[in-house]
Image (tube, rainbow, N blue to C red; front, side, top):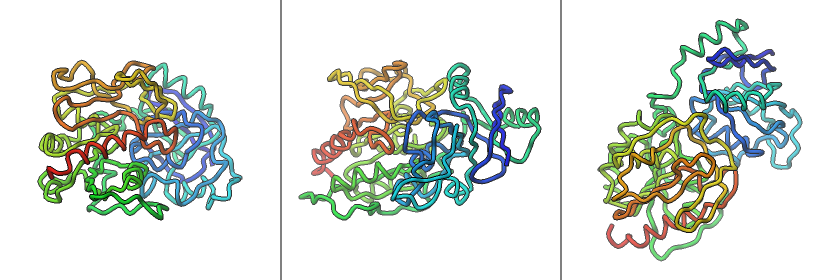
Length: 371
């Protein structure tokens, strides 16, 4: 079946459909990871986006039941140069195409993803439509223009859970025992399972809450710390989470990841802005300003906290992106609060930054007697 990817500026990419048929709208972005496509597909932060993989061959190791980052895929469409119909891995349970079909996700192959990536880098991320239904290119471009996009749209409500639950892990047969069990509350704005796994591996008791949970309900459970998760879309549109964070500042240790950092920045009086084409992939260099050490990080975000909008009397800049010098980490100088824009849990990608979870656990242990 023929498929068309139409961008709002009139650029057209044609290919063959695999996965579900139909029509989907989203912001077109590219991901530079060479592997880990199942983790990318199931990352809730991709809600509202059509993702193109820069690596040319995708699908060669199939899909399985373990390499997932959420309960289902949330992205709007998946774009590849060549889809491998043959899956060569002992872990594979079904082909990528079958997985997409089963989860009602559209895929398109045969696209010049290099040309698409270069176009997005030059012109910026833009609204797009992926269709097997409408062959009229001009009509599709107009549809893309009229689609809502990401700015000003609350997508957290589309990915968060309905009710709280205790995370028991995927494939973890044992976990280290701590003298005192550390209770972590996770505000689910689109949390990745890898983050929950990292906490569980460190002996934490992990309870995941809907993003709409009031601060009073979280405090009632007497957690020792709060993880503000990653998530999709424009952070400024998620006003209820910003309010919750403001009410929790100083009440317990807080660790923010990706959207979580943006929520913290906004809650502490900062501003956010939209990046030209975002950071999506597993090879972003990040510098720790305290040590000078450079780590290769996993990233997936289209918005960022404005460094100049933060009050430097209370907030310390801890990390920057070496590609574009944007903000990658902050720490409050007086309160037990820190965050990073990148993904320390990897999934997929390098594990350079998993020590961040050790720092969070240490922070909670230090404060544990107070809660």
